[in-house]
Image 1 (cartoon, rainbow, N blue to C red):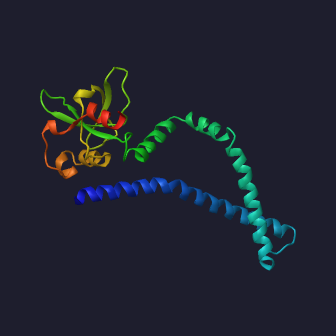
Image 2 (cartoon, one colour):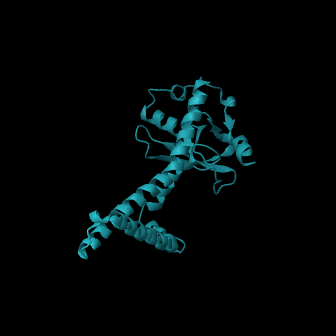
Image 3 (tube, helix red, strand yellow):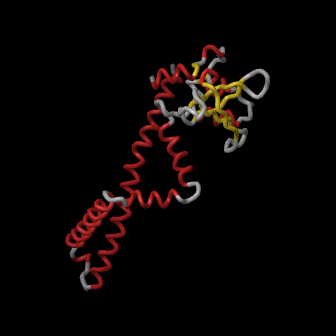
Length: 218
């Protein structure tokens, strides 16, 4: 019960963080722009022999006016294809799109049908299973197959990708991307049950991907 409450609390905080980030960044940019305009207006006043300290209200009014004029111009530019143009230019930089997609994983993976799934698939040995990640629930080029990534330990930035039939993928629903990372970094010193703080389960107790897809995408 405590773990469920903590999980809900953590997920809600993360959602709040990603919801607040655009607002925070906007406020920081606005304050930075205002500071630059404030400095520019003060220099212009000094050039014409006007002392801002003696006319603080006029100085403040001029800075605010110039600031809103600039925002108005930028607002018009934002409605054009300028943003898409710059994004298209950035997309040509090697790795930009990959970095953007990785950031989006952390933004959308915590809840809902687009979250990163921690799954178990048939292992390399003749018996047993490996724990991996599904970064997307999009069907592979092979019908009814889905991409599962098995990361390396202790450095998880390498690994292998497999196309696995959905009936052979078992979703560990209580596990998250962070749990999988902790497990990899422990090099097996901690069992996955310890990381997730859950009792070991029979394979049949886990949700088959086909059932999970029906539940969230049916």
